[in-house]
Image 1 (cartoon, helix red, strand yellow):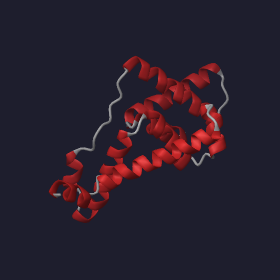
Image 2 (tube, rainbow, N blue to C red):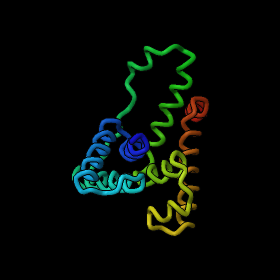
Image 3 (spheres, one colour):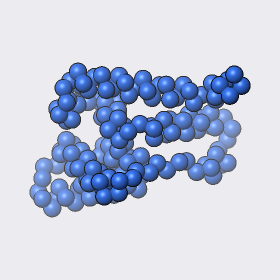
Image 4 (tube, one colour):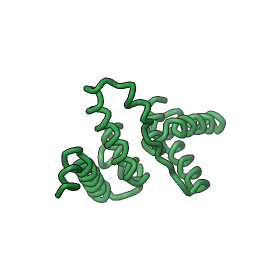
Amino acid sequence: MQRGFRYAYSLTHNRMDAEELVQEACYAISRLGGPWNVPYLFRSIRNRYIDAGRRRNLLQVEPFSEAIHSEMPDDDLVLMDFDDRMDEALGQLSDGERELLFLSVVEGYTARELSELTDSPRGTVLSRLHRIKGRLRHILESSEPGKREAASNG
């Protein structure tokens, strides 16, 4: 269940939506008598996410609350700044990019397994992962506090 939640969260980028996706997927699997394994759960979550996206046609990313910053000690603000920047950077990726990155980095799927899951050639998966990581790196580097100040002064 926890892996399913993390996968759903990587798709939705929203805790409540992820919980709802997992609940709907589990309900559907139990109602239809499907197998209880991770690939089937992931596919069920993904299908429900795609259906919800088609209905909504708009995905929202929820920013961190400013109240969180006021409650934290100063030494934790550096980590929080990185979390904010990472959250913002992940929000700039497309749904498919976040999904592929999550399955590779967090779940540890190999390129061959990802190619089977996405019905794409292995080389395509590898090049997409390379581009996604490069794009994420570029977004994070350009959002570093020192680089933002230098860019605005220069």
